[in-house]
Amino acid sequence: MLADFKVILWDFDGVLMDSNAVRDLGFEKVLAEFPPEQVAALLDYHRKNGGLSRYVKFRYFFQTIRNEPIKASEIMVWAGKFSEIMRQLLVNPDLLIEDSMAFVRAHYHEIPMHIVSGSDQEELRFLCQEMGIDQYFVSIQGSPTPKIELVTGVLTQNAYSKENTVLVGDSLNDLDAALNNGINFIGYNNLELKNTGLQYIVNFKNTIS
View 1 (cartoon, one colour):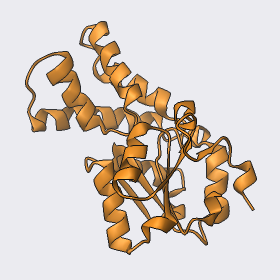
View 2 (tube, one colour; view 1 turned 180 degrees about the horizontal axis):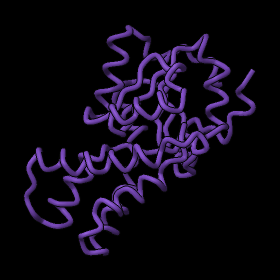
View 3 (cartoon, one colour; view 1 turned 45 degrees about the vertical axis):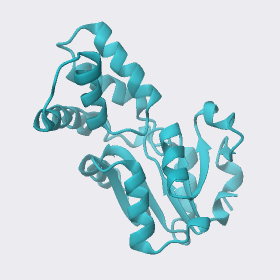
View 4 (cartoon, helix red, strand yellow; view 1 turned 180 degrees about the vertical axis):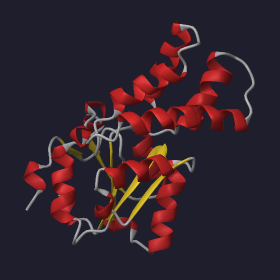
């Protein structure tokens, strides 16, 4: 199924790396000075919107949860603090999801692959390089550019055929990015996506030839 596509776009967190729990911890550490119930509300928003960037989530925390204004420059400061923690905690090859990474290693020579993630782009490239997996991907794209625009950019810059391109993701935001760009979508690692009736991969073992 997946190997039949000519181009594969991958989400990162929850698809190639089991990093969602670490991301939770990052928000808890960065926002430790604020009331626990407010941090819990942010974590709930974060978990329900896996494909959104930290920039959007910090803005939501201050403007919606705390009901206070925040400047773009201040959001960058909070995002920077978050990134420092992520660089320390996520450079861990044991967190890579071997199920999906085995497929990547088996097919990257013949199928162009890109990462399109809600994670910070520079942090993401740092992590992939440190763990030696950057070699598998034509490009590694991340926030603050929204995922819909990242997908558009990859399609346009490489003149890819939409009907031959698929995005593999674990969130509704990933699905939205695919639908808005008119490309195929395959869900993974999120049973809510399995229940949408769309294509879904339980594991990659049977897709590796």
